[in-house]
Image 1 (cartoon, rainbow, N blue to C red):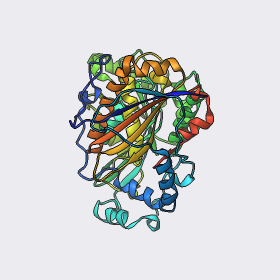
Image 2: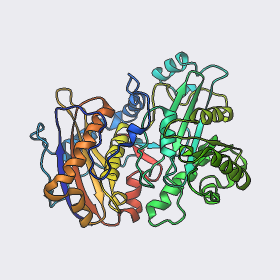
Image 3: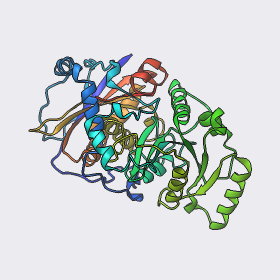
Image 4: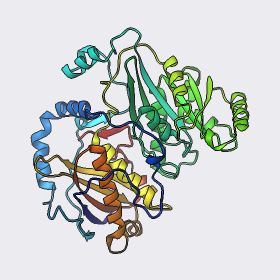
Length: 432
């Protein structure tokens, strides 16, 4: 049932680098970890080119629908005001299977399927060498143990959102870590939970299992600062019957929070009570031990050419990460249940050569009271959220954007399987 929506438009001439604008969260986690800068070449150019080729037959039809569904843009130099509208806007029906990117299987490395760009990249980046290694790695663990921080450190840039709240990762984030003689494809997965409150939780756990099925090896991340507990449910949910078929590494994270003598005790405990092949202590926050994890992975990956061009960081489209940036800001700015009840979708993204790119984002919540909290008094809370999101989006895209944010109410969306599939929780995400 659609109860209403709120809209906020945000645009400014000042280019921002990730800074904290939040009263409820005085620190910005991105600043606590060092990441390398973005590649001079857009890391998503290759996947975007493939998406355009797959969708060329739909461009005319989609262009017509876009022109009908997009509202005129006014006063783009103003920060805008929050407003409430009573009618649902026409939505762009991206239901075609060709507009979706599947995350449920590995891509085919057959040379016959590669385009000219990919063939040139294969010849020039060393991936055709007989000693080249490549493969998939599933990163599993309970909520808030540092899976996303570890994945970001290995990739060399921030792809997975990081907050101090548990269960912030919902989708499997595909990150690509490449060098001359290897390519590691990381699946950063949602935290494994025992009690599933919503249909959303069940679909997320299904994605965890699928990631493990596709993996050449598995990392199980645990919190070294907590009292050791058996992690059978992690193995059961994520690895299951594969535990005897794939190499498993327990990553003992957050070693910086305990004394050196305690690390040895933790290692001894996990060696005794888990069936993992190896255990490595790390501090993903500071990068300590991350190279040891990478060396372990490379020792387990099979020989073979790269799955993807070496200069891209992810196969996910830009719109996916734009939505994740907005969702991260929601987790950092709001408290209690509100962040967990929010779903962020990029409704439209238009590149404009003579103006700022136009991005329209919707935030879906389950209750009208949650919508009121998101908007805040006189729209101030939504204004802070939109401004902070726009600054990070501009830093991510390396260009100026005009961001429009809408808040909508869809009751019990976390229990609606049809909506959840539309939002990409069935292992397919939209590429346009």
